[in-house]
Image (cartoon, rainbow, N blue to C red; front, side, top):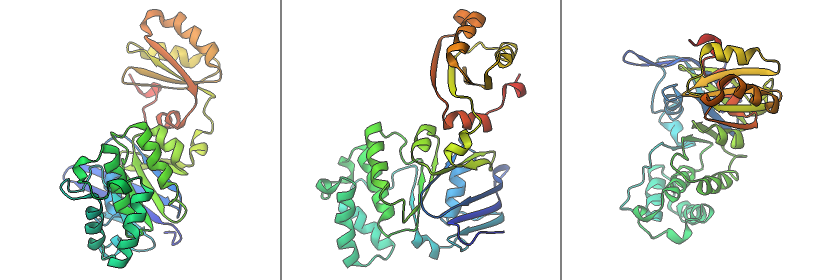
Length: 309
């Protein structure tokens, strides 16, 4: 049953593109307010779901409600979208681009006269108001895209990998600024950046194969993980060797991905010496951190050692 109080409610959504299934029984509930992250491998269905929330795609099966309504062209006035690629015309001036976007959403001229300077100031672009978009840095352009998406006062803000290619300082500025909106606006973030999601999201959903495999707050998803996360650059690790590691006391989940072995452990200081005794020079490097959302992600998304050959 759909929850009328949710910002977004999806049940058993299906969508195919020819022979490729993008969404397959996708079910998710996004509460109002805060930042909700959708995390998953490329091709897992994240962008397709955001396109449906923005009424740019229609489900082939299942039910979808956005702010209590079926997605429609009229509902777009209540949703703001930042796409993976910048959409600003590089020949337009910064303030001119915002005014053009505001007119597309039928924002009154008097309102635009107030909101455009305020948003440019808020996103650190006031001094670039008359500059062509082409002269802005990559980070500035991403901030401009977010300002454009907020211009018409949306109740939901969709962010599709908004910080890809943005340096860490620009990323911090962007999220610090967005923090002011999270109380009144529901932010739905699709990202592959697990550290970013861990830092900014109130709740997240892990998506694989077009369906949600786990959801909850970062803290909830990390419950049950061992204390330490050990990442081992060990391209030659065999299934037998990893099974040996898994048998050691205090060892939790083990996943091998692209030559890196991820291990959660009660005590990394006891685990690492045994690793070198086992593999010696086959190990090219080791890093140790506290268990993170990335470790929970690998637990749910990646194939376990027992299932891999």
